[in-house]
Image 1 (cartoon, rainbow, N blue to C red):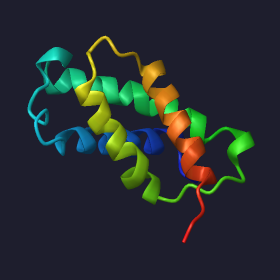
Image 2 (image 1 turned 90 degrees about the vertical axis):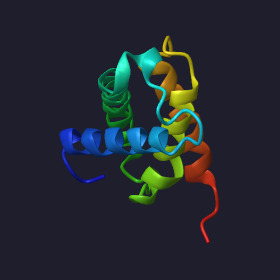
Image 3 (image 1 turned 180 degrees about the vertical axis):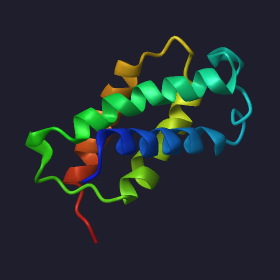
Image 4 (image 1 turned 45 degrees about the horizontal axis):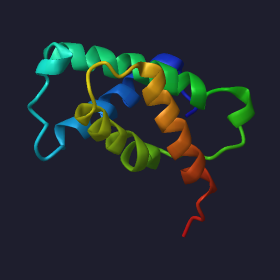
Length: 109
């Protein structure tokens, strides 16, 4: 991600929301989040934390192509919509970190 933090955050937020929209049974269930606006706001908070994490200098040698949005962020959005609305952005960040570490270490074909 060689763009601004704001752009990264917007892209991450969009893919988190897209993942939630793809959920087979919960894609229209945003009542727990105070509607779509509340859910998108929560996604924006999560996206800001994830963007900060990804853009830290110690990760400058990591490779995380745009495919990360499809392989990690969309499924994360689907997971978030299934969780209780008391979920915190830091809990989402921690889940992302775990998945990201495993993904970055996985052999590429």
